[in-house]
Length: 262
Ligand SMILES: [Zn+2]
Image: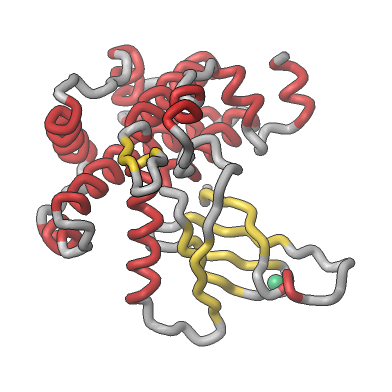
């Protein structure tokens, strides 16, 4: 199933007809942009500042609410792998004086297998923090291997564990921050991703009939926003959430389901 997000159609948005829906469905692909299409056929390539792991994680929550547990578990795990990768890249970007020259070198290194990404993440994390990186419980790792090899199907309880645990791991990855010139704290992985998107958009050739745009998205996502703030605000936002709290926060969960949770 494709991972989708709802965005405004930037062509319909400027139409005077207030009866027209201005929403579009954007599909997350392996490209550097989301492909957005509204029901009137307007196509847009959206270069967002939200890393893919945020879309994947929210897709996992949506699948959970639809009791589609395989989709839920695999989406959450893909979110984790993507968060590792974004962390690695954001560090390389800093090491290359905020230039994107490292991307070609990284591509040549073929860092695409899960274990390799995880190894590079651990190395990078220890160098930065001098601490052991956040890990999943053995039970989740074992379940992941069994699910991938078709030995067991994921169930409700396992998905709830994955929602909570993978959230806390990505949350800690995101907390890697830099302080900008104004004294505000910026989460590096998502800050980097915004710059990456701008860079990729600047290289993109024109596509006939398709508008290519940079979209800044703040506040809607559970994970993935810059969350720029003062040190005090930053520390207050550091509280980890339980599965129930995460689900209640999600805009994808139907109201009925939220009532059951409370
Ligand atoms: Zn449209």
